[in-house]
Length: 92
Image 1: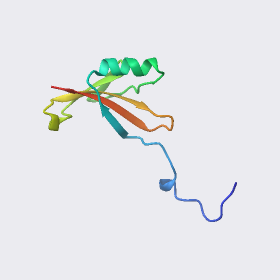
Image 2: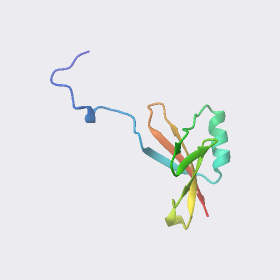
Image 3: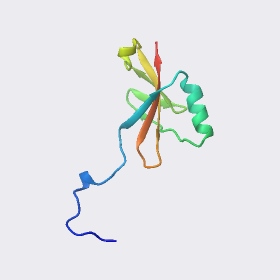
Image 4: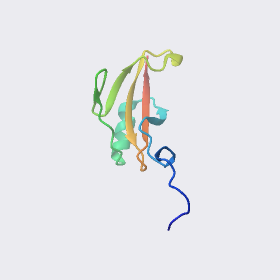
């Protein structure tokens, strides 16, 4: 199938989100990661200065200040379209 007119610029074409598109707070990230893995979810590995995952989970200092937390434990995965999604547990 073709269409008339010029191709849209690349910035207007659908593409997966490279930054976290949506996130959910969980009470127990270890259990959440384990249950999601049982269902076939693959978690992203991160190895960057100041941010490293271990078994799919990263300790992130300074997140959740509005919840009086000193940070969060976080994990990221991609949906079927390649968008980055996350789960996080506040560290108090």
